[in-house]
Structures are given as structure tokens and as C-alpha cells.
Amino acid sequence: MASLEKFLDIDKSQNAMRKYVVVKDFLNENDKKLFYSYAKLLHQENKTSFDGDNDSLAETLINGNLFFDCLLESKRKLLEEISGKKLLPLISIMKVYINKSTQKPYRESPHRQLTCQINLGTDSEWETKIDNETLNLKPGDAMVYCGNIYQCEKLGPLKGDHYINLDLMYCEDTPANKQFVFDCRSRLGAPCA
Image (cartoon, rainbow, N blue to C red):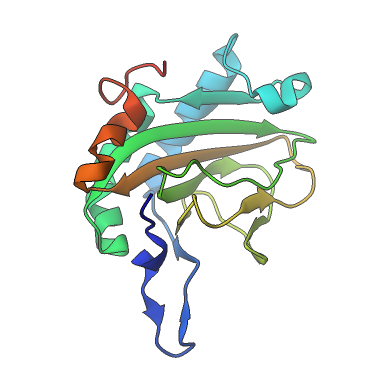
């Protein structure tokens, strides 16, 4: 599987690879309110879509939601500008973390080459660690990175009531990667198999 590791360019001053790019105000104020409100409503109404790693906490986990997949498609051109690559949309993954939630270190599947992690909203700060560097995304901010290469996690348990995270997943548009378009679903917004 080819990697987008070099998509972030070389930082000429450091002569090193940037591991991630933070995009401040990735969502404008209206979009931030809209997506945050929608995610909170999904969480309040959720009866069946929970994270299997932390069932006792009732964390909502929703893959491939039609509304979030619209954001996946609408932000693709911007992410192509950031990455310098033509991208195929894969899937959106929304998770609502609640008080005392934890997030273990993880890497994405090999075909999920580009991850755009968005803080949709929270009532407390929760530091993100990516490959031994820490940062704090504000609501509406995004971190763009190679999720299949760099390990990501949240530090410590969540101290607030909730933290809503949305990941938009892409891979480079190559003949070999065409098989992964929409994360092997029939279309955007289609349920996962």
C-alpha cells in the first residue's frame, strides 16, 4: 500500500517532515454550530451505535452518516490543496466521548491514508498526542495527518461531560486505490457492511 507520508511536504527550516497540519477554523461559526448540534442530537437519540471498546460508557460511534459524508465530500478540494494530492473520499466517523472516556493509541487501516480529525465541540479541553507530540484542538479546528502511519491518542480520561470528534478519511486517487472508494460502500451515506 502506497503511503501519503510525504504529502505534508518538507519543512525547509527544520529539514524534516511535518507529521500533521492544524487548520484553525476548519469549520466556520455557522457550520460549527450546525454539526455540533446535529452530533449532540444523534448521541441523545442513539440506541444502537456504540463503541465496542468502551461499551460501559455508552460512547456513540457512527460510521458513514449521510450528513457527515456530505462534509467529507465538500472538504475534499481543500484537503487536496493541503495534501497536494488528488483524493478519493472514504468515510466519515463521528464519536461522542463522555466523562471518563479514554482513547487508546491507534493507527488507521492501511488504505485510510489521510485523516482529517475535527473537534466538533466540547465542554472541556482534551489533549491529543500524535507520534510523541501533543496539541489541543479547539472546536471547529482540524488536524490533518497520515492516519495509517502516525499513531494518535487522547491523553488521560476526559474530565468534561463530552467531546465530539469527527474523522474524515481519504486515500490518494490512484488506479490501485479505486477499490477503496467510499470505504467499500456502494456510495457516500450508504451503511457500512
